[in-house]
Each structure stands twice: as C-alpha cells, then as structure tokens.
Image (cartoon, rainbow, N blue to C red):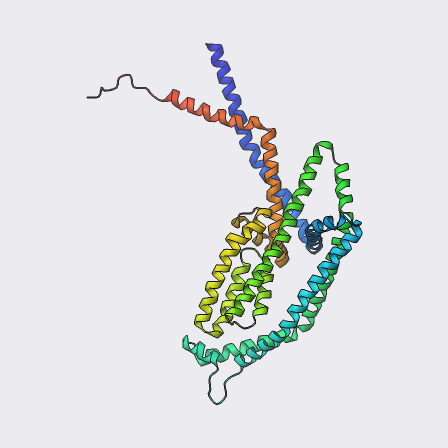
Length: 393
C-alpha cells in the first residue's frame, strides 16, 4: 500500500507539472508570435506600396490562371496568356467606353444641377432646395453660409486639379506595373512552384502544395466571385434607379459596382448616396429606393454573396469586418479591398496548422481528459458521506 500510494502521488505530481508547463509555455509562445508579427508588419509598412502592387499583381495572376490553363490545352502557354489579356483588355475597354460615354452627359447634367442649387434665387424667389431646407427649420442665414462654404470648397477643389492629375498618372503607372508583373507571374508561375517543391524537404512538400492550392482556391475564387458579385449589384442598382426615375442612374450603378469591392460597408454607402439623391425627386421615391436597397442588401448578404464569395473565402462577417478595418489602417483603401482574401488565406492556414498539431500531439488532449477525470475522482473521494441518513417517512 505505501508503494502504491507513492506511485500514485508521483504520477499525480507529474501530471500537475505537465499541466503547469503547458500553461506557462502557451502564453510565451503567443507573445513570441505576436512579436514576430509586429516586426513583420513594421517592416512591411516601410515598403507598403511595393508590397501592395506585388500583392495585387499576384491576385490578378491567380484570378486569370484558370482561363490560361483552359486555353493552354490547345495552344502554347505564352499565346494563351496573350489571348486572355487581350480579351480582358478588350472587355475592360468596352466597359469603360460605355461608362464614360454615358457618364460625360450625366456629369454635365449634374454640374448644371449643382450650379442651379447653389445659385441664390433672384427677386426674393426661393430655389427648391432652399424651400426644402426651410421646411426643416433651417434659416436663410444658415443656408447662405453653407452655400458660401460649398462654393469656397469647390474653388479649392478646382485649384487642386494638377495634384489630382499627377495622382491619376501615378495610378495609370501602377496599373501598367501590376499588369506587367502579373504577366511575368503567369509565365513563370509554374517554374516558381516547381522550384519551391524541388527545393523543399520531402516532409514539407505537402505543406507547400497545400499553401499554393489554398492561395489559388481562396484568392482566385474571391476575385472571380467578387467581380461577378460587383457586376450583379451594379446592374441591380443601375436598373433600380432607372425604374424609380432617379437621376444619374448610370453613375450610381458604376459607384455601386466599385463600392461593392469594400466588404460589409459597400452596399450601405452606395445605398445611402442613392437615397439622398432620390430625395430630390420626393419623399415617396426616396422611401421606395430605401426599401429597394434593403432588398438588394439582403440578396447580396444572404443569397448571392455567401454562394459566390463565401464558399471561396469562408469568413465570418465579424472576421471580415475586422480584416477590413485592419487593412484600411495599414494600407488605406487598397488594403481594405484585399483584406478579405488575405484573411481567408490566413484563416485556412491557421486551421490547417491547428489540425496538424492536434493530429501529431494526441497525447496533449488525452492528458487533458485524464486531468478532468482525476478532478472528478478527487471531488467524489473528498465528498463526505453521511453515516446515517434519516429514513423517509
């Protein structure tokens, strides 16, 4: 009995030591990984633009890779890449032509409308905007002050045309760089993949294959799904604004297409802008547009979005919103646009690492079960048992 008691006490002490060791090592490991991530983010912040352009080029290459593989069945790879890019360029050019051709007319109409709204009425007459604002209790002095501030801001905006032109040229240069880099990635992508596989230890090749397959599935699927989703939402908004006779329907549809790339908030922002413009046509039109956007948001969030994009990325809305905020803080608007696919890749990798760790460390979970069982046994053993209980009745 004494020997058995000593062995039991020793085994119990070993289990307690192992438990406390795990409790000590896990926080240290978490702090270590947080420090590594902080260093990586600090370094990335100093070369943010270059990394962002490279990431966008890689995303574009992943999005076009399935089409290249399809054409590659009947022609050389370089010719397949050339045809895919020519088709994309032709479609993009035709799309831009239709938008610009219609938008020029509507922008002119919008400028005339703004000029009319900002011009003070003559001979004491009120403009429709002044009458609407006064119906909300806003005084004429406040309206005049707001008009002067808007005119001053528009004058300042006109004076910043050259900086805007410079930024636009930089944007065009970035587009050219992204296109060229993505072409090189498509041409040499298979070589890079083979080099990675051949220069990795055998036990790591499966992980490399999983990582590359995850990138192609999540990132490529996200971009293709997001393009399709944005196109559908843009068409729904444009057609809806035409049905409700809201002015500048084409511009609003294009705006909805662009804002849809921003997860969670895109549809809400475009809907708010459309409702504000619909107010110029009356309260009933504005309420109808609001209801229409609620329906569009439900379709986008609960029907179309999960089927098209959700299966490829697999992110919870809370995680998607957190990724959006983090991407916007680190890299601005473009960071917000590509926050979801990056978060989707990280989520897939973390889940894979966790599953692999569980499979290779089953003893850790068995020890956890043993600890729970030991606690139950101790509670039962320590519970006082009444020697004599009062008899019932």
